[in-house]
Image (cartoon, rainbow, N blue to C red; front, side):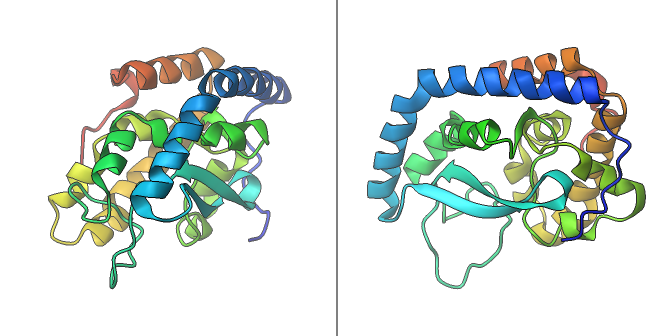
Length: 219
């Protein structure tokens, strides 16, 4: 993927502060949660009868593809090749639902943050086929590292339930949800604030949503 993303993103100082914070917090997070990641990995390996780590190619900073790491929460289901997950998806195991609810499946992404492939806050990294289609000023989304959380992630915390209520979840995601996520992510970058990053992390930890960033309501 060509590196032609919009460069009008964070200032050098903002990038430095954000990256320093990411490294420090990722190190602390891994030191505190390595045992939980290990237990979740072992449990997921037994539960799904596959590698307990789910590793998937995602489009990240400046359009570079990297391998995102999560705890595996889904089993293979013949004939189901969609990347869209809905509420009640039969591919998600009972243990997987618990890991997702408690956000434990996301913990291995601390490794991605430490490696510089992700940030704690930013646009969620997309699979090839979405970010590749960004055009014009929408490509500013690629000028920051993708995040574990952010305004779009918080707004669509119940995305699986939202998509489950649609007759064509993939079409609704492509035509309604994804464009709205791009809008929110552009707004986040253009109005970037380190203190807002702290706020997004806090809201993610306590399971609430910052109302100021959720203009327009749920589609």
